[in-house]
Amino acid sequence: MADYQVIIVGGGPAGLTAGLYTSRAGLKSLLIERGIFGGQIVNATRVENYPGFVEGISGPELGSLMHQQAAKYGLETTTTDVIGLTPGHPHTVLTTDGSFEADALIIAAGSEYRKLGVEGEERLLGRGVSYCATCDGFLFRGRVVAVVGGGDTAITDALELSQHASKVYIIHRRDQLRAGQALQQQFFAQPKLDFIWNTVVEEITGKEVVNHLGLRNVKTGELSTLDVGGVFVAVGLTPNSQCFSSIVELDNTGYIITDETMATSAPGIFAAGDIRRNSARQVATAVGDGATAAMSAFRYLQERG
Image 1 (spheres, rainbow, N blue to C red):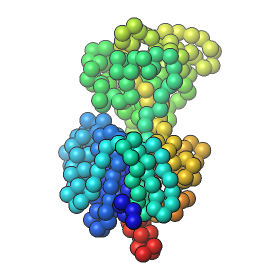
Image 2 (image 1 turned 60 degrees about the horizontal axis):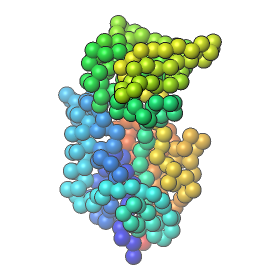
Image 3 (image 1 turned 90 degrees about the vertical axis):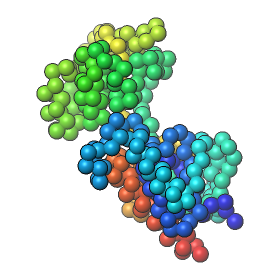
Image 4 (image 1 turned 180 degrees about the vertical axis):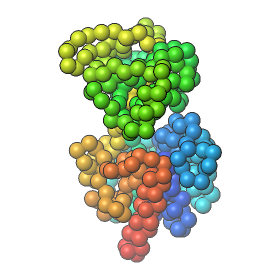
């Protein structure tokens, strides 16, 4: 007999909602999270688009409340790294603290910030290099900073940073933004913000902290240097699907392919939240995914008897 009826990998909104639903359904459930319960919302200073919180709520508080609610109904949780998965009857989840078995799995491992992969990025992480403006923006009060990217996240980060920094440059490899129109209007109305178009970062330099960015114009090849006290990387997300790539079908960008019931290509394995293809990557949709995956897992176990 398996250790659990359901194991959930990932403790963000999708995973915590799945755990709430499976536990309330009377299924013995374990949630495995490698870091902080709440997922990426713990990086949000204020969540203002989640229904029910008229004045908004801090990301850490929302994540904590979700965790408390799921635990109230019997969800077991553990903090460890998942390093592999062996499908079968039951499925086996391999972690750095041993293995766990379950008859059904819900993968809600989310995604992580994509890196530039340039010299100085890793060395100066936490010393001027950041992937979260809401987390670190206040540290750059009165300084000149740069944001790399051109989508919604990059523009949102730039607007956040404009509340603290003296000047914010947006460095974008194209000559137009991918961000939504409403965000663009906010951006162009903010005098502290300025663009550097058709440009990529080649190097991040500084002895102890970030001092300069080495830039290259992608059209002319011209090299230049920009003096900044910090750089915020906002070039997208990478799904945490590496452990599952040989088990479930992925699309060409690494996201898990599911149907409308959150079922993957592997029987008894479901996926929810940012890790699945076509996710809107919002708290509200992650919660919906988690509920759907939990109900699908419940039906799967019922059908198996």
